[in-house]
Amino acid sequence: LDRQIYAQREAPHLCHASFTRGRPVLASGVFQVREGRLFHLKFESGHYLSGLDDWKQALQLFHEAGVRWPEGARLTLHDRYRFISRRISHDIFASSEQLSTYMGLSRS
Image 1 (cartoon, rainbow, N blue to C red):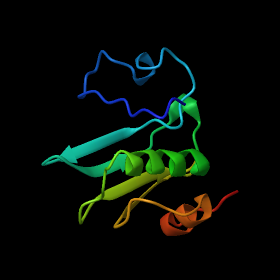
Image 2: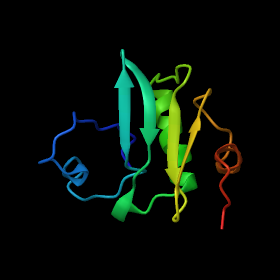
Image 3: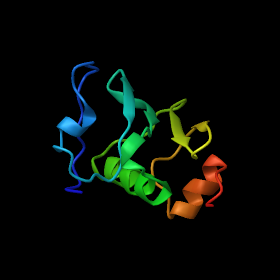
């Protein structure tokens, strides 16, 4: 909730909750960087139970940090039943509804 992006190279001994000592976060997930550019962002919230509004805020945070999506980059979300992955060409959405429509999610 402090609007910071916490990142760590993949390390099996490090739990993502270690960054915040279990405090609430906007969203959690995994991102992949290639040649210094964000290539894949996968929101895997697990026990954080983040959703569309949280993901939209997290995307806004990446945007504010100067992160842009290169051609061919992917965004993956989970709608409680399945993972949905889409190529993404822009790094900001005007609303959670716009993100939902882009990803083909329903807001139920």
